[in-house]
Image 1 (cartoon, helix red, strand yellow):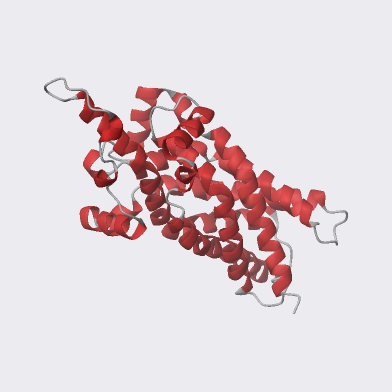
Image 2 (cartoon, rainbow, N blue to C red):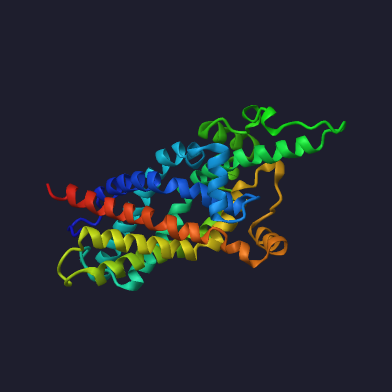
Length: 316
């Protein structure tokens, strides 16, 4: 990854490729994580998985994936490209050489800046993804309430109610246009503050552990890490980052799933207080196990594909 130029485009291209591969690997568990954090009626992770499969088949795990696949690839391109180029800029101005290895303070600054930048692009992507992931459960809940509120006491089978006609969003584009019409541009950034609380420290605990593990797993200081070491280091870093970010991620998911017509959270603090009072402190760690499991293959795939892509581009 050493090059005399301070700014390099291949980091962005490699990040794009890595992002695409990580979305495919991680989206099913991301759906489970979102349902656990923002939904109701799930006793635990296994119950959530079985419920989604029984009611929605395998396709239920991939709800909302088309939009992340098209956009998170760009998001990861920006994240990895910005992080790598920021490291080189810091090294150039601190040590006079963009190839000089970054220290922990340098990595921390680069990671925090990356977290700040990521929210600008990532908040709308996450919002649309979560709204699409959650709408099936919201429709089922509305149908249950409708079936239970029939005035003449007639029993209406749940399957007799047309759920498709009640869907709020037909797809990603319709979701974006609906949010813009009903909530304005700021509606696309609902939960953005919680995302900042998640991503600024989250990226510090993402890139730094990765660098540490890569150094520990190298046979000597001068050699490049083996692909297996990159995979392991990336997976461990992903699990650490996602587990520690779970409380902020819960708040973010709840605020983003909080549609305007059914809004119950006035802001981050109100969401935290309301969630604590109604469900207890444990709610902020809901989905932590899914995050740990999901974070490993996603990040392992992300870092490995990113590093291998860079090696390929720079071999010419």
